[in-house]
Image 1 (cartoon, helix red, strand yellow):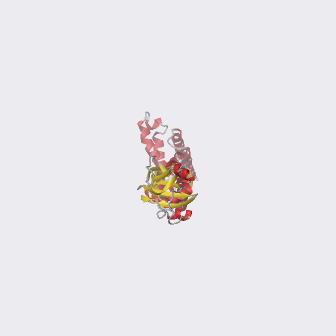
Image 2: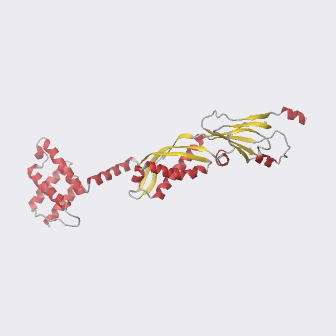
Image 3: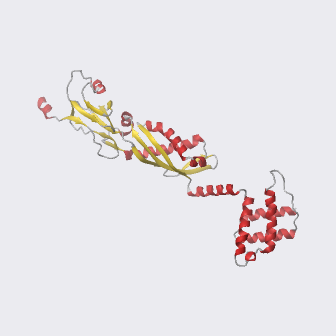
Length: 337
């Protein structure tokens, strides 16, 4: 009876994987109730690794090549089974194939803005995204930590874990480097290199090798980007006093083109002269060396009132803001004290 059972058994004499499923990283060879024939042929292609697991214990790992499976080519499995050197018999063992092809054009990014502490802007929320590529290099580590005894394990199942790990690493990188956001955004290539160095050991923990990492964009949410644009604009223009002078100087010629000219704005020639005097004094003050006070020009109460009325007309026209008007008003009132 035992002889008949032995004859009915099916034996496997060729073990190979053709990787017909795109994106599969690990695949278990279908054993069912079959046993591997001693002396069977194992083919591991250039983009693969093969791993034997005996009763839950990782045994032999095979690099690309063609092998005849014997007690000599399966040293660890032979040791685990305590085979005698002359033992010639079929054996049962789980066999897993792993793809070592480079997984190209993998995308990473922040699904939601992440909060970081920036030395220039304080607490900000930022976004970043890019692409990366990797390949599997350590079959034993990947089996023990990721794929396990699954029939197959796909690239898509690993994508979320890798992406979240990269976002966490990016957050740590900002905190550790102390580099300002504006400098990091302006040097995306250097940022990518720093991220690559930080993420390489994290990928190795899963049995993977990170091949490339590219940062394609680093940005702030729209509302913060507007504030940054305003700050950049103010830095380019200069201080508020000069900015106000610039606005008014540009507004007067434009108003003169309108119907009624300067009078149509409620300004008139007198206002133009008075405003010109105030602006001239402010510009002269701005050009003085630091620490040197500007001489206080004499001005009558009537001139102050007239000038304030004209400036207020500019506020109503939207040429000056209320804050700018209040600043000029304070300057003029000081001249009366």
